[in-house]
Image 1 (cartoon, rainbow, N blue to C red):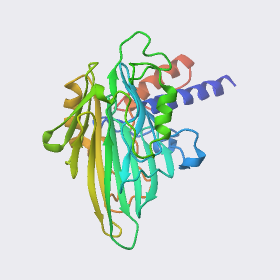
Image 2: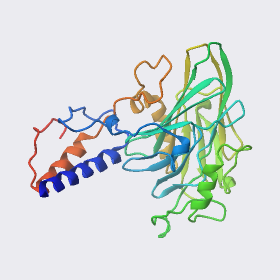
Image 3: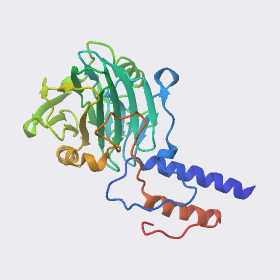
Image 4: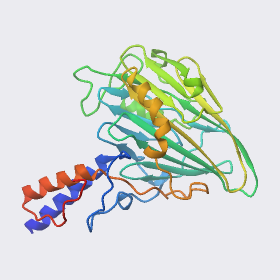
Length: 341
């Protein structure tokens, strides 16, 4: 009985470590899993319809967290002390409307959204860069029709993130920036999440606190908080069709022209943190997207929602923690030391 309790404890502990691991860096050593230890993909949830969910998937790593919304792009509740997000990051608009996802799936290292709109299958993958303040997007548009499809896609780019250092900013219900200064904004944030598909799109109540400029020949949008030492940078591996700014936030637009059975992928990152540091990371990560966000096999064909890359885990952390706890619980270690441990 005691041994069963120990094993249950160890299973829960390892599950926690795997969940916290989030997105793994490509430099991590790949090690074979011990018998009976599930892969991250095997720990994934099932696809659930929007109507069946009380809450949409969240993503965490050792540094940051976020919650995806019901549209195909925006994320909310981004937090990595001392940086906190108000409002959301911006919605995807297809032909001037905001489609909403039909299905969602949670993985320990990513969140997926999928659905259909205007003759296109849309599949969004979000991850957080491991141990960094960075969010990754890959949005795949697939023409499932027997005819060519033409569409216009716009993604709003909103960087309402501030550096909050007051002693009461990081209680369980952490403070968020907004009109009137930082405070707890649960109802306000949830209302903005619920309204992501409404037009015209909303704006943060303190949008004028931020200044936005376009850089790197149309590949980056740099948003600086004028009240705190915070910077948010959206960056693209290739410039979108157009990248515009009203001086406080921005929008990226792509003309989509797809023959039957073909796809187009939109990729970008959002880095946030100290001024200068966020811009340096955002400039580097787009070129690393294939490493940070590997493509599923058969990426040249229509992607079936739910087909995701095999997860990479930080076995160095997991093995050491597992060994420490097995010693504390006096349980035998049943596999040999691997090179990464």
